[in-house]
Amino acid sequence: MTKKSYAIAYWLLPETAAREVLSHEIAELAKQFSAPFFEPHVTVFVAPENTDSPKQVVREIGDIDLELTIRGIQSSRQFTKTLFLQFGLSEELQTIS
Image 1 (cartoon, rainbow, N blue to C red):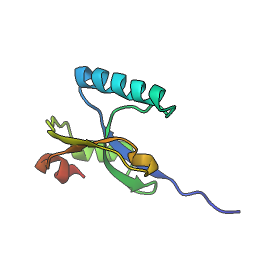
Image 2 (image 1 turned 90 degrees about the horizontal axis):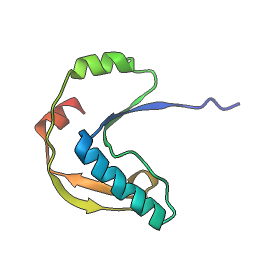
Image 3 (image 1 turned 135 degrees about the vertical axis):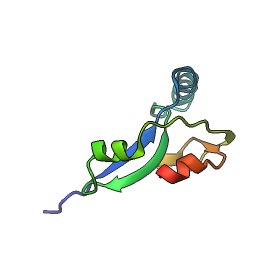
């Protein structure tokens, strides 16, 4: 029997107004292309399951307030990147990732 491996993805979520706009657009595109709906988010990093507990990781990151600049909208055939926003470099985001 093969043991499954797991990972934990840490996301940042947009503030409420941006989340509503992005959610609407994602829902429209998902409907148009018969694709799955997903929550708008920024994947900060993915860690193996056996790393620090999620609560510890969040404590270490602390309360952050980031403003990211959208540089473009892109897509790919990769399942986890079918549609994504390309952001400008952010020193704060690079530090926590």
